Length: 235
Image 1 (tube, rainbow, N blue to C red):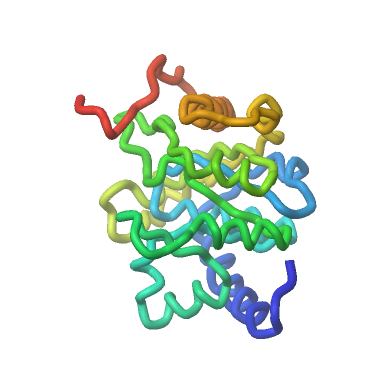
Image 2 (image 1 turned 60 degrees about the vertical axis):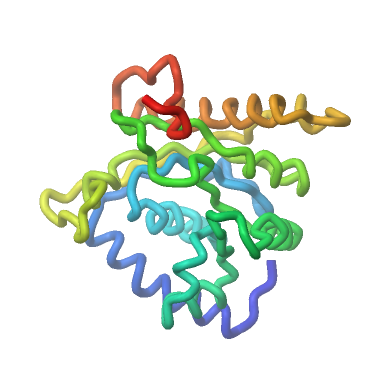
């Protein structure tokens, strides 16, 4: 998609700050960037730390593409970072479901062949063993409304540098950001339906969550649970 000189300057400035910091904090083990389409895609990743968006963005930016995240609207209200996020065409999300048409804004980015990064879980995983949780349906709705391919992404390791609840990253020992980019999720069975039901959307969402889990599992070891954690259900 096209960017103004001002936007390019903001991206370059952000990259000049974030990329060296990322390199200093963590080693990188990233594979599968060849699976990224030239343009116009939805990247669906598991969410393990408040720090991991910086590394997913770094991976996308280093492949020559500009990342666009759906981020909570409160970040856009901050004096400096809020203006930068707006200039970089990041997308605010009102988690209370009011006033912001995030789906329409994401559709506009994809219409211009941009890259949208989505965390289908909607938040960092609450699964006790940090496996991917049940996904929300917005990712699939966006894929259907735009025709954009969905690319699953599995990641592990960033949570060791910034664990849940930590205010500052743990610089030593130096951990590794491991990211695996998968091939496009086959959603043709859904796209060819005349009227997809909520059950169909949920099945497609679970398909993508399964692919994300399959990419993540070899990075961390262990066997995923038979039943995916659902924070909406009481345990």
